[in-house]
Length: 98
Image 1 (cartoon, rainbow, N blue to C red):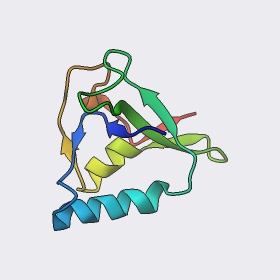
Image 2 (tube, rainbow, N blue to C red):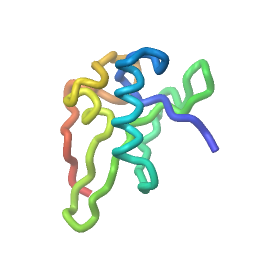
Image 3 (cartoon, one colour):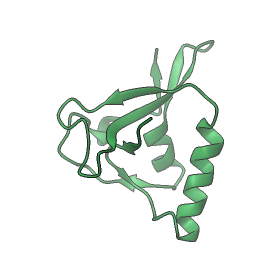
């Protein structure tokens, strides 16, 4: 088991009311679902040993996957916090073809 640091976004701390809202939204979205994890090729882990990644929720029947990182931003649960890595959050699409 490992922890994931969602690449290039920042959300409120979990002990705040906004942080709890973001955590609940993320949990409702992906709990019990299979996700695809695109791990950063430059820095696989952060200083806290969390895997840095963009997470996708595949909808196989539709042929698309939801970019969970972008979904959190677009729904106001997080904001872009661009770091040096392989990802460019300003070019993310909410839905990507599988």
